[in-house]
Image (cartoon, rainbow, N blue to C red; front, side):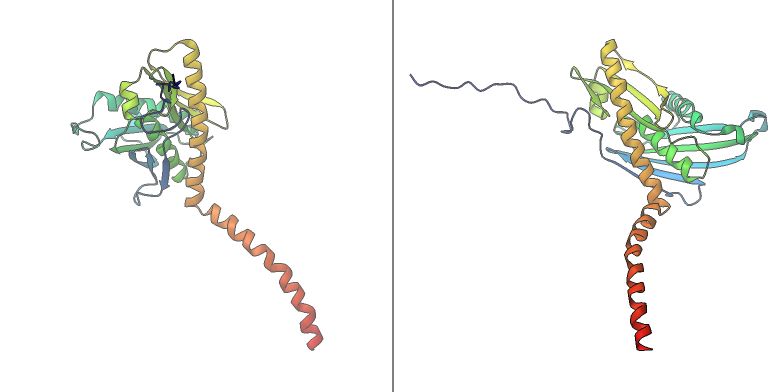
Length: 266
């Protein structure tokens, strides 16, 4: 009798979009996208498309809301009616108000608000297309927009989430993984100061799973941080200046070699 090899029926586990467990979605960030704003940024994080605009520091209206010893940061998070399917009401929802408050608490520790007494800094976030993890993507865009506005910051705020899906801890959950998963842990992080400014959790995980998710999310924040810095460098030409400086250096010794030839002709 011929021996037949049994093929294992187990398939290699993969995520919905084919990413690795600890892999971020593709991220692109652009600055200066709103000419009339003091600072602005546009981010694509996966299929999320988000615009952030910063106005201020400026005088607070109404004045009764101002603080005599420090400035006030106000964040407004809003999802366009066409950003999700089915379409949602254009009116602000309770969720919009909650995320606006969460964003304010996450970003404020990075700002020197004590330098702007009786003033306000307004950050407007508009979700053009949503694909899960919009609060993290919005924080990333808002931080870059604040830096683009020239507002002094202790550090850029980078944000990313990790969670549990199909009994595995994964990084940067997409829309399907967020809705069908067991839990979600969004984090905002100041890499230079090694400080967490936002830590939320929805769902259930064990202590070990929670610790692993937090560590994974912080590593994701560090990757996002590098992309944020590159976007700002590109806007202000820091990358181009370094490249041109390297190209100009080898030309100097060539001029020195030509001087003795000119003297011999004389």
